[in-house]
Amino acid sequence: MAVAILSFYPSLSPLKHLHHRTANLFSISSSKPFLSPFAPKPTTLSFNLSTPITMNTNNSSSRVTRLSALIDPDGGALSELVATAAELEALKQEASGLPSVKLSQIDLEWVHVLSEGWASPLKGFMRENEYLQCLHFNCLKLENGSVVNMSLPIVLAIDDEQKEKIGNNENVALLSPDGQPIAILRKVEIYAHNKEERIARTWGCTAPGLPYVEESISPSGNFLIGGDLQVLQPIKYNDGLDQYRLSPRQLRDEFDRREADAVFAFQLRNPVHNGHALLMNDTRRRLLEMGFKNPVLLLHPLGGFVKADDVPLNVRMEQHKKVLEDGVLDPETTVVAIFPSPMHYAGPTEVQWHAKARINAGANFYIVGRDPAGMGHPTEKRDLYNPDHGKKVLSMAPGLEKLNILPFKVAAYDTVAKKMAFFEPSRSQDFLFISGTKMRNFAKTGENPPDGFMCPGGWKVLVDYYTSLQSEETIAKAPVGA
Image (cartoon, rainbow, N blue to C red):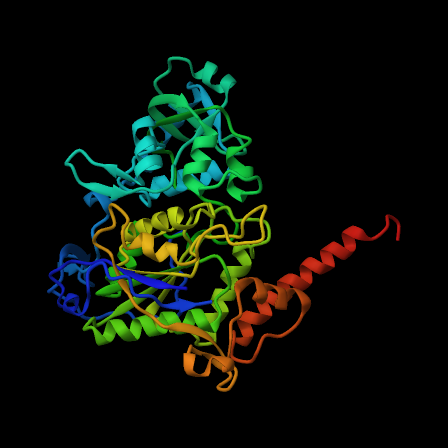
């Protein structure tokens, strides 16, 4: 199931086509964006939008100011927490003399998220009052009395020994998993980490087997440490994908370069099939019909922690590339980038975070799938969450009042037309629903999906990946000396 969440200035005329807070339903079962070489390079400037942007022209002595249609970040400005190059050496020297906390890989991903402003207006790991608001209200109340959504705790756990070493120190150095200083946490506050309460309120479930809990929370310490974060340098992973990890600022610049008057974001942690593409292309068509002139798609795969049986990020990125190359999505109106957040699989609680973060990147519209951020119950044979609750929660969530929901129809594989199409109840027998799990099973067993389900280039990427896994498993099981 999928819904598009809309958010934009009321001065934009297409708003007359929208119904605020409607809950209509639609469904389908480091520096450069991932752009096509054929992406357009605008030669004209628009002067009828909202936030001023100053741009250099070819004449270095002149500057042109135009206006941006992008929505403001939560809190009014991005909380960008990376130090300047001029500060770097002094900060490294300071960090070397501070008590330190070594981060896990997931902790590092959260530093990345915070440093670029995805969690704006948050300026560091949560102190206790922020944590309690997030845990109990799914939002933060700002000094001016306004409320912003914040549904997931962004916290850093420490153990008893680390707490003792920090003592009364006001500042703490944060080290990468390989021991390098990457940030300083200032004016720290240490408070109790009640893991059971955190798990129960975030997931609505304390059964064993929740992936993020087992990876990050259960083995973590009994205390949380919050404070203002100052990151020494931009976070890099050196995995060949850093050029796709665009910050909210970089994405906003790209959308402005393209003169986008609407940005619609689609998050996914699975390969793109033609049903996804049908939704994204139909979203753009509807936006054009509503009066927008240049809607741009942000195809935004999640790039942080995922559970072991999800398709790895590098494979997904290669598959997405083939989708653009095969023309399933228009490379001239699509930006592909990586969203650095870890995945919680926390259903309606987590989907609020996903929507809120894309607002900070400038997205006016957000498409979210059926059972967003959900998973099967870890100990029972059922879904952990009601698949319809994600879109309902988004229509009511505190701090997301400016968002609207754009209705879509159900899409499935039409066995008569042999392509993904919008579901027609009058001939339901002609439609086949192929879940992400079923899609992965096709690829694992070498069975081809129906023609028209996925572009051939994209499907080959998946088959090659699962074939390589099977080869590795065969080698691993071979007797020694065989």
